[in-house]
Amino acid sequence: MLKLYNTLTRKKEIFKPLKEGEVSMYSCGPTVYNYAHIGNMRTYIFMDILRRVLKHNGYRLKGVMNITDVGHLESDSDTGEDKIQSEAKRQNRSPYEIAEYYTKVFFEDLEKLNIERPEYTPKATDYINQMIDFVQHLVERGYGYEISDGIYFDISKFDDYGKLSGINLYEQIAGARVEINPEKRNPYDFALWKKASKEHIMQWQSPWGMGYPGWHIECSALGKELLGDQFDIHSGGVDHIPIHHENEIAQSEALTGKPAVRYWMHGEFMMVDNGKMSKSLGNTYTISDLEKRGYDPMDFRYFCLNTHYRKKLNFTFEGIEAAKTARKRLIEQLQAHKNAQDANKDALKDYQKKFDEAVNDDLNIPLALGVLWIALKEPKSKAVYDFALYADRVLGLKLEQSVSQTQQDAPQDIPQEIQELAKLRLQVKQAKDYTLADELRNQINSKGYIIIDTPQGYQITKKQ
Ligand code: AMP
Ligand code: ZN
Image: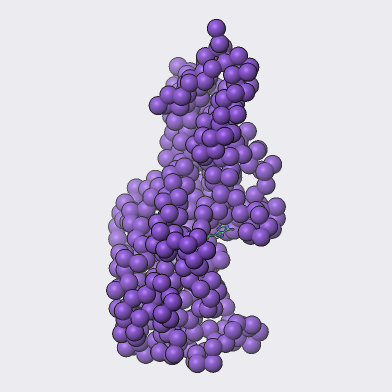
């Protein structure tokens, strides 16, 4: 029995999909104007774990993750420039080139982290007509109204506004410091569609002249188009609860008159050194940054899995170092189990049951990892290795691959130090830091060993 915490009801609920055997799920995707940082990646690892747990329970998946390539403005109060357009100007490229480049890097990062790509990954700009249609219907139904800079949603018409975050709108409005556009009917009304000035690069023809969609309408329109009026799960980071997701609920439910989403799920934030990640502090690390410092993306995944998704996770280099060491030990122990003959399958059934109970209890992955570590203490047996592979269908730590890689990489007569240098060199090479890779090759050379690149990785030999 799978239980998931629902932000909307503020409790763990037994999961029951609308359609038997199939789960429809929407996850807010990246705004592709910049490299995704490790905090963003924590949220996508959470999405991935959720998908894997659903599959582990036998469900077929229909998952959507949008790519925001238009409409996400610099300020949440519908002001400021489009984030992609302003980056395009800065780099002197077109917004489409910017979006294409960062989308590509984003998918590479997903792959490095063994995050399965959802079934649908639509670009917002491919669905402009659906968004216009959506807005038009909201206007017809009296929820949308036009002012000089765009079409806005009238939140006073939607009684349930604030139900996800439990915001008391009247208290908020009293204490609000939002810029108030005097033409708006209520200060918290938000843009469904913005009219574009001539200078605005991305703009489309609409019933209200040339313009571009608001950010929130994108998710509502894509969800409806690809998953239908009602679907099972919507996921994202906690920062999206109070504005983005409240607005999605308002738009979708105003249009169809029924709840669009059954289970709202949110991953907590990642902090760095107990503070916010921000460009000005220089602490918005990317996966490539970690690789350059010698960490495998799987070290980062392991680091994330150690904390429940609803708890804040503080990133430090000591923390990821500890994760790296633990993962290395995990692989070494698995290797010993893999090579053992004895297969005591019965003893493992209990572990499997405990593992399933943990992951099905609102994705308690830290507890599930604990079950795996206890199993590793059993006498050496191939059955333990098989159990680890069973667990890895959910954990996604590439355990099978890592164990065989380590076996390949570690011929008996090559000293540990050289093996570590070679491993590090492969990682920095994958992160495209060729200067450092060459330096490491020289170090290996000067210690009397030769490293040769092979299609599988590399081979080390002792100099004659
Ligand atoms: P964005 O591209 O800003 O829309 O963010 C993409 C995803 O990353 C969203 O689901 C955010 O909620 C999430 N996110 C942003 N910052 C963090 C963070 N520091 N920790 C965890 N998730 C984050
Ligand atoms: Zn969204």
